[in-house]
Image (cartoon, rainbow, N blue to C red):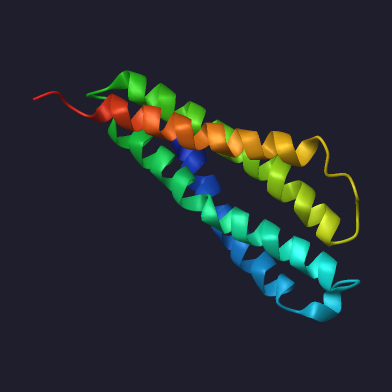
Length: 134
């Protein structure tokens, strides 16, 4: 397995753990200044957890493809990097805003959102690389 794919698998596990832990934190309203900040934090958790399957698929495609479709491995790495960047920028910004640490959401959150969308598109591109022709 390529080192990049190992890193994606490790990050998938750690980000899954973090998502569950942050979700538990978000469920306790007493930790937030008001309902708005709790809702923003909860939105970050939902997007965080919703994008973990895409990261897992990128790791899976990249792990299975090297022998038959080396381009798919590179594409899967690109998809994984975009998804990670998007999660860091979009979810990270919302986590900070929800926790009351920072009020900055522009342009960081929109850039993160575009990175997430590009990550899904790159994932489709990677998947096409492993489809065999009949």
